[in-house]
Length: 126
Image (tube, rainbow, N blue to C red; front, side, top):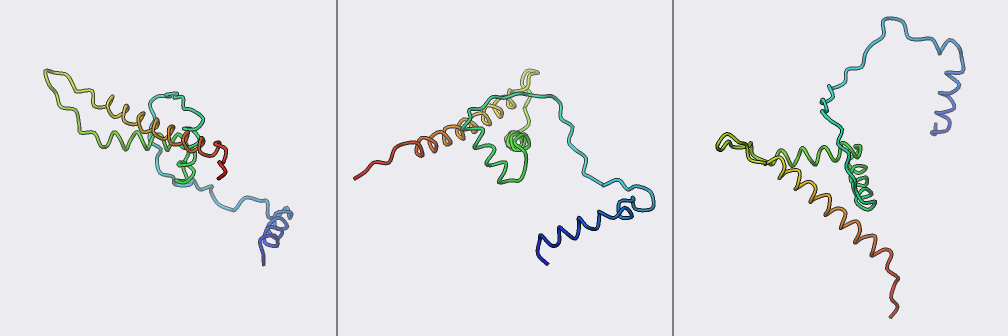
């Protein structure tokens, strides 16, 4: 049985009214892992090339663009040691981590721009 035949059989199954009734018994809730709580919405702007590159990487990883960016930030924050206290003030390590993520996004943007320029450059003939 090929895909088209299998799909036709499934549609025919649900054409019968008896097959549209809910299953007997109480409804079951699907067990899903808890979602991490997100604190605040932070808009960022990327060039079209950088956004295309981020979308490409997110698609390859099978996740959303937002999840890919959050993962990049989390990865950077995980690399950062906990702040040490000096004179009662924490060092600005989180700011440095965010700056590293921004630098990585800029690199992706530059790479995407260079790739786009290579594809747009007219072919030179010998």
